[in-house]
Image (cartoon, rainbow, N blue to C red; front, side, top):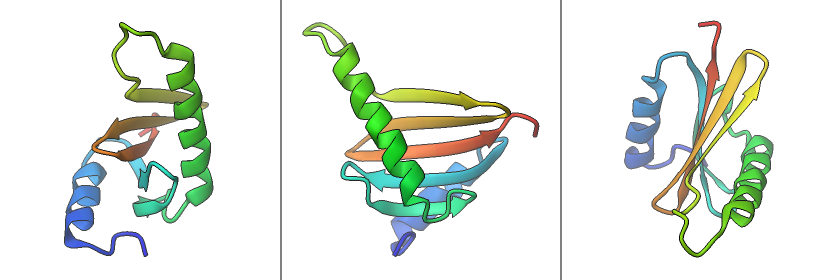
Amino acid sequence: RANSTPKMAMLTQSLQAIPGQVGCLVISEDGAVLASTGELENDERTGKVILNMLQAGARLMKTEQSEPFRRLSIICGRFVFLATVSSGKIFIIKKDEAR
């Protein structure tokens, strides 16, 4: 179950402090939901779609001298999804730009 450890609960609490944030999702590199809140609560489908986009971006940007692909921003109308890869996890924030 998502948010099952105190460490993940603290992490999602920190992510919830981001201005305009309406949901957050932490997934593993295989797409499993590790923690989630708000509009992304247990949203495995969105996690997998963004994971596929990150993987495609990493393949596209891969060169011998480039930095590892770590961040992706997706703008959908008034919503922005921000995805960051760190420590083997993918952190996804959904922001409402109208807020």
